Length: 199
Image 1 (cartoon, rainbow, N blue to C red):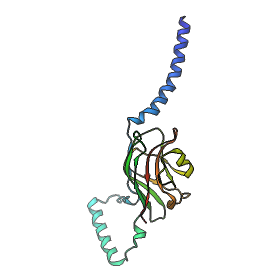
Image 2: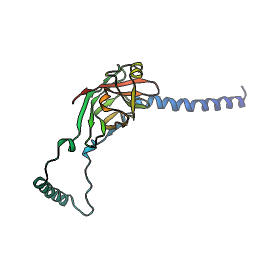
Image 3: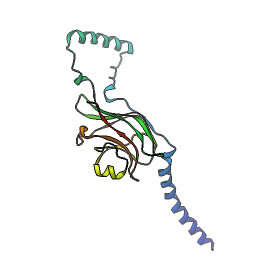
Image 4: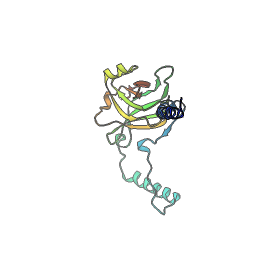
């Protein structure tokens, strides 16, 4: 084999190897990398303190305001100040390799919006995982999921942690019977959380 032919073969091998290695990394790296995302519940955001006000002064002001509110204002109904749990469930393993655990709660916020909250989520990581909701109470195959129909809430933010996912206005929260962590490229269910009505 001539030197020129060897160089050509080497160039071809390098050109082929780069995308193969990149694909292998994309496919396999999630198996040994974890992404933790911890988000506050939508109603637990705190107000920023005005500039030039110390923490102690702010606490005194808030304490005084609370006393005034207690004396002057009628209490707001719970439905206006608190989120209401519509349904809840727990993630479980899809099989011996694709595992999941953690709590799921479907909330109706005072604004009328619905949000799905994961707490203590821990699921096997994988490529391009998405959060799906379905009318099927416990889909274990892609066929069951496809036949029942589903909506995607977007990409899974992290395979561990506490996370919020807004329910789009096109989805009726009352029709959601399960939450699924799903690998889009390979059509594989990683974990399912059947939801039970809390109303």
